[in-house]
Length: 190
View 1: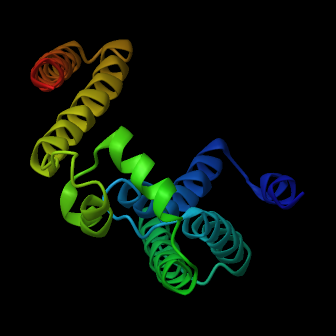
View 2: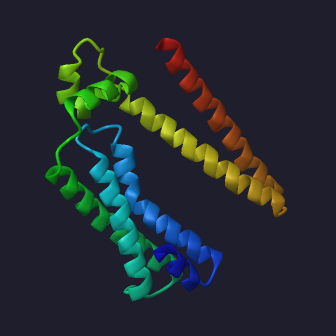
C-alpha cells in the first residue's frame, strides 16, 4: 500500500528509478557483506530493507534537500545509506547470530573469504580457508565495466553516436572476456 501511494506521487519514470536506487543504496552493503562477515543475520537484512524503505519514503515526502536533481539525489541516497547502515549494524549486534550449525553448513558449502569468518572457520578446521577477496573485487570491477559499457555503448549506437558506441561496446566485450577467463581459471583450480 505504501509503495502504491509513493508511485502515485511520482511525476516521471526517472523519479521512480531514482526512488528505487535510493532504496537499493541503503541495502546494498548488507547484501554484499553477508558473504564476508559471519555476524550478519536475517534480522540485519530485514532491518536494512525496512529502514531503507521508510527513510526513502520519508525523504520523498519531506523533501529536505533542495537544488539541482543530481545533488538532491546524491544527498538523499547518502542519507538513506547512512541511516540504514547505522540501523542494520545496531540490529546485527543486538540480535543473536545464526546458530553454529547453520553458519558451519554455510561456510562448508560457500567457502567465503576466511578473514570475516574466523570463528566459523575454526569450527570447520577441515575446510581449507579461502582467501579470494582480491580476485572477487577484480571480478566485480570487470563486471561493472562490462555492464555499464554495454548499456551505454548500445545506447550510443542506437542514438547514432557510432564511434563512441563501438568503443564502449568493444570495452564491454573485452571486459566480459577477461571476466570469463578469470572465472574459468578459478573454477578449473577448485
